[in-house]
Amino acid sequence: MTSLFSKFDGTASALGALVQAGGRNPFAVVIEKPISSTVGVIEGRETLLFGTNNYLGLSQSERAIKAAQDAVGKYGVGTTGSRIANGTQSLHRQLEQRIAAYFGRRDAMVFSTGYQANLGMISTLVGKDDYLILDADSHASIYDGSRLSPAQVIRFRHNDAEDLHKRLKRLDGTPGAKLIVVEGIYSMTGNVAPIAEMAAVKRETGAYLLVDEAHSFGVMGEKGLGVAEEAGVEADVDFVVGTFSKSLGTVGGYCVSDHPELEMVRLNCRPYMFTASLPPEVIAATMAALEDMQEHPELRTHLMANAAHLHAGFHRIGLNASRQVSPVIAVTLESLEQAIPMWNRLLDLGVYVNLSLPPATPDHRPLLRCSVMATHTPAQIDQAIEIFRQAGLEAGAIAEPAAL
Image (cartoon, rainbow, N blue to C red; front, side, top):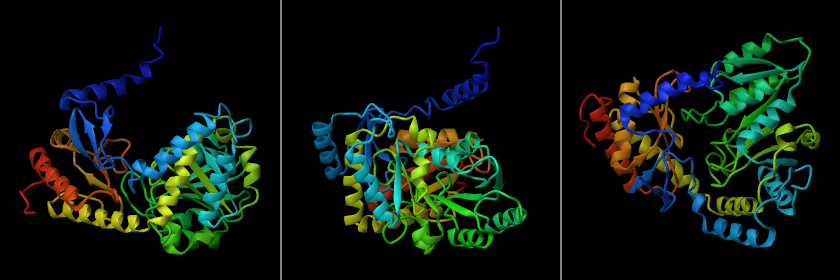
């Protein structure tokens, strides 16, 4: 009889090879204790955290921790229901109002995760007679949302507004709505979308535009609203989707929009309708972290300065790092034979980053994906660069010793 699990044989074999080559499962690292936003205990050792997406360091916000504690005492630990049943409390409405107001939008929907925000909005907005036009390097949540939708899916080359325009022009005269979906900062590589060019295509073709600002919310723009604010094209964005699990350090997702029909989306969006709502302590902590972000714009300044520091350091020591400066900095390696020993050696020496492997990487080469925080000190960044230099030399990712 065929095993139900035989389909996973390839994954099991690949994971076994990874563990055998490096002595660790890179996808099962345990942060045993957070010491601060930038340092945690891994394998009993204090380790610099450069792989957490905690861009503003707000997972350790004293205000957010106090708000969560107070909410538990007042509301309990959970809602036990979905938003359309018993799962809407006053805190949920408050958060939606605050997020909408912060973006200067008419309304907001809050989801239990950022993944569900993309899954829900994309699968609900486009129907069988519509077209969904995706950047080829879109996040898994976007692709999964497209699979739940009956719409026809068209992909365009990554960050290529000209290719987007060409594919939309081919649809001239065809019935059905067209929804363009792009990300602000792409989570794997740190590439920033040319959103002004995308918005121009949207205006010319009459399409709708959804921007996933998960990795750019709190990072870019004067108020931290993302790439659309940075480029001055917020009015061209119909739907902004994002998450609380990056810059705000909690968990959950949202969509903001000026379209009054967003209220009808609530009643048709299955990932919203059939999932338990966020617990009150998470909602309270998220609102407190949002206040922190609003009151401390200098966090974004520190974050981008730190990103530039690490980016320049990687290039200086001879690593193949991301072209653009953003809080996501990917170091591309040529082979698994380089990537696995280097990732393991980094952890041995006290730096945790994310190991990303083909086929999940854009060009089918392995990546060491780093995320920078506003709360990293210059000394911590210099220490990480030196550890990368040592590990890179040992793994053959750096051809010659480079002076710091």
